[in-house]
Length: 449
Ligand code: GLN
Image (cartoon, rainbow, N blue to C red):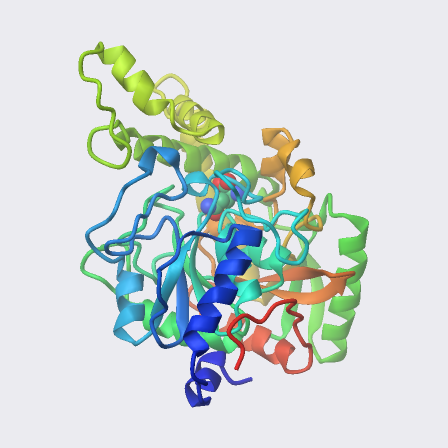
């Protein structure tokens, strides 16, 4: 299928097109709280939005955190700079869970609502990115995933979400959550758009030494691997739909096999240990001096000053600072942090072996999108367990894509496909082939021509 980017370029734009599109988008934003910042007027061209934890020159970028309110970066993140350099037009900063801490997109002020039905969550943490993609016809979202923040909201909002191999896209200008896990990725309505944008943003960058120039492959696999441990605790409705999906794939010539991967069920605790350990050090710099919200009262004592500054962190952020500081403290770090690092090593190897045989396929999420109050009522450990399928590829840095494969009522169901490091194009080819005769449904088409 052609990319919407090519389609857009070829079409005549009627008079007043951009003004009308901006007006429609502002109305959507009022209803669904998608953007934290939107420009007053719309630049002409194909639009891209940027998750709020990725810096845009001159535009407040707060990672949807109160403590970073008022922070206006004086530079563009590399991915943003490259998008602009190729003629894409910036449409706004998309809301997210504070600093990326969350699975449902509800850990921020006036959180996004699912455009399919606003009583339901969008998924997180790239909540606004998915909602923007769900409402806008000619648009791509630059998003970010640490442990599933692209796959999950893409699945809940019925769009395609791609998380590249760790290190292929520069993280320069990203407000770090957990540096060894963070990946900038893309959401779009078509896989061809993702491919186009991936080619624009990937590649080495002198500002990020973990970013590499490597040839990216498109090695097709004919074997689809279902990892038994990833299929535990999945809702019946999701399971039955997924069975129908894999049967369809079999009839198209794929071979479906089952495998088990040692220790993959330990990915969640390992991920939450490593990610909170890194987050707790990253968040140490928000002291009310340098970035964002300033604490003005210098007459108070040292403890009062920092207590005031740090109290504007949200509940989930505080929880992670405490947990992360604990797991890397001298007396217990061998028991938690170092063990988690060993597990990650083992998982890279064990998953890598299985991935050399074929793609790993599964539903993206074990549940259908929950209602907002249902998600808000989950205790933290239960909420973390919802990442059981999206965390393993993120922990091990494997590229993965989530795309809609079925609908239950109005709601889409997303499948997640994982492949070996640097075989990223194969994912877009697979999803692209699926799109050839499966039509994604969009309730809104802001900016249609
Ligand atoms: N839900 C996971 C977390 O809260 C993933 C979030 C992310 O990828 N930013 O850590």
